[in-house]
Image 1 (cartoon, rainbow, N blue to C red):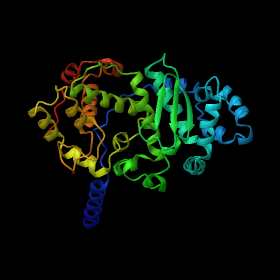
Image 2 (spheres, one colour):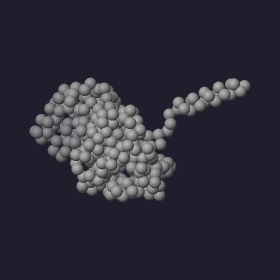
Image 3 (spheres, helix red, strand yellow):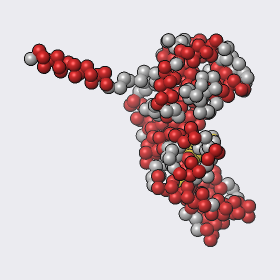
Image 4 (cartoon, rainbow, N blue to C red):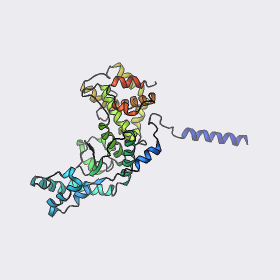
Length: 341
């Protein structure tokens, strides 16, 4: 019996060691679930498919078709959609072979948007929880023509998602772009990135920043954007928020104290040199300061860690106070951020 007992304990220990440990680097404040549920009951997001409405127009009566779209899609077609120039441009767009191919694939990947509707509805419920006076935006889906620089556009109360930029990292047309789109970006062209991209873009409306920022403040702007996105979509992992592979995430975890030490030693935090700022928070395959084994925009990841430390060490303060604070040094001091070696 003793032998069986020890064997059982040994197996249990192996299982416990094999189970993945919970990632404690994330910090999302607790919310009042019942309040959030009550708020969310009054929100019902349905992505308006401008792409589908546009391609459904009879090309033989394009002018009238565009006029008919004004009721639901004035944001796109404007007040005078049937001018000769607009008709010419729209005809070229609808007949473009790449655009037609993209739309066909969008219809295949997104025959409906129920999962996205649900995720956005839940996210906007949380938005109203943190910001009761916030306006829930109207959401549209489009075929952008591979506008990879801005796959999501947020303007006032309108949120536009370029569905053709989320067709899967292996979609053939992405690779045909060649040097136009850096290869490291392909991994982000998948459905699971849409929600975080939407909320990161919306974050600009809810965070404050100065016109002229230090590197630290630029790092914190990016950190706030990712924190905002994670508040609105709490189950989103860091790898999606930042667009990093798991090995790059591990590198950051393993080198957090060294990264911070380097920033302090080289006195980079308070620089306003645009080149330095770009090297720290700009999108890139790797960070120039830390070598090819590192991911890009390391400074943005550090900014997120500072924001999380601020929330952890200021439990009596609302997260909205963090988002509204412009002074980077004040946030850093209050955060007590100091990664362990």
